[in-house]
Image 1 (cartoon, each protein chain N blue to C red):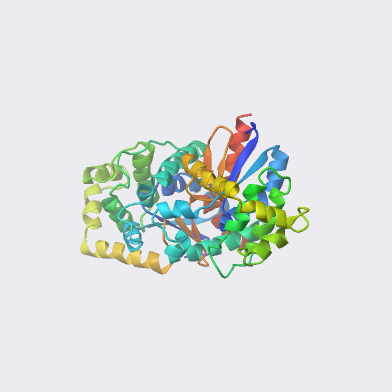
Image 2 (tube, chains in turn red, cyan):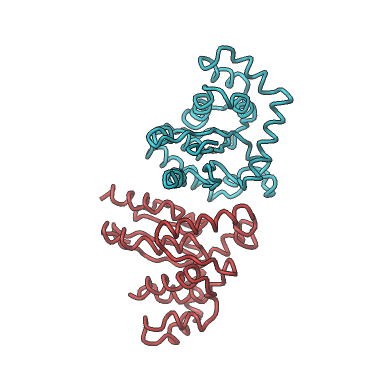
Length: 201
Length: 201
C-alpha cells in the first residue's frame, strides 16, 4: 500500500457500501488518495457471530431504520435508490469477478455498476447473465472474466481474502483501512478516514 | 414538543451517548434548537433481541473497534476519555434520578456529570453515594431526589418510558427524534437530525 492509499472493504450486499462507493470518488481525487477496492464476503463473518442472515433482517426495528437511513443518505448524496426485493442479495459471482479483476482498470466501474443495479435500480445481481451484462462495454471478453472468476485459484483467493479480513479485525462493511492500519467502520466514517491520512502526510 | 425541540434518547451505559451529550450544546444553541433529554434503559431492548449484555461485549471485534472509535471521537471533539473497567455499567439509579428530574433545570448538568464520571474519568456510576455526589451543588437536597427516584410512581414512569421507546422504533442509543417524528440513530447522525429540523423551518 502506498502512503496515500485507502483500502475500501466491501460486500456487494451492503447498502452502506453502495453509498460510499457512490460518493467517495470526488473526495479521493481532490485529496490525492487512491482507493484500493477490496471485495469480500460478510456471510462467513456473520456466521461466526451466530447470525444466519444480515442483522438487519434478524432485528426488524434495526432493519426498518436502516432502509430509511439509506434512503435519506442517497437523497443527501444525490444517489439513486430503489430498495431491492431480496436482501441480502447473493453477490458471490460478482464478488469473484471483482476479485479476479483486482488489478484491472475496470474494477471500480464494474463495482459501481453492480451496486447501481442492486440499490440504484433495485435489481437482482445474483445471476450470471446480469454479471455478463455489467461487464459488457468494460472488458473485451465478459465471458472470459466470468470463467476466470470461478477457477479454483480465484475461489481460494476469495477464501484467503476472508481470512485477511478477519486478521485485520473487520466485522462489517464498508470498512476503510488507512496505510498505517487504522480501521474505520461504516460509510459515516469515510470523512474521518480521509482526515486521518491527510493529517499524517 | 415544540417545532424546534429535538428528543435525545440516551442510556447512561452508552459511550456514544456520552460523546453526543458532550458536544451538542453549542450546536443546538447556535441553531436555536432545544434538546429534550430522554433517559431510558437499553437493557430491555437488548433482551428482546436475545442479548444478555451489550452487543459490544457479545461480539469482541466490534467491541474492540467501538472503544478505539470512541477514543478517536473524544479526541476529535476535545472530550476527556478513560475507559471504565466495567461495561456496560449499572446506571439504574442515575437513570431514575434523571427521569424524576425531567422537568428540572439541572437535568442536563446532572446527565453530563454522570457521563463525565463514567467515560471522562472512567469511574463507577452505579452506587448511591456517587449519584448523591453528582447531585451535590446542583440541587438543594440530593437525598430528596434519590428518594424520589425510587418511588413506585417514578419506577413505573421508567417502565413506561421503555414502552414509549419501543413504540417510537428505538433500538439503540443515542437516538434523536425530530418534532415531525424522524428518527436518527447514533452520534454520527446528530448533524443530520439538526439539518432535518432547520430545513423544515
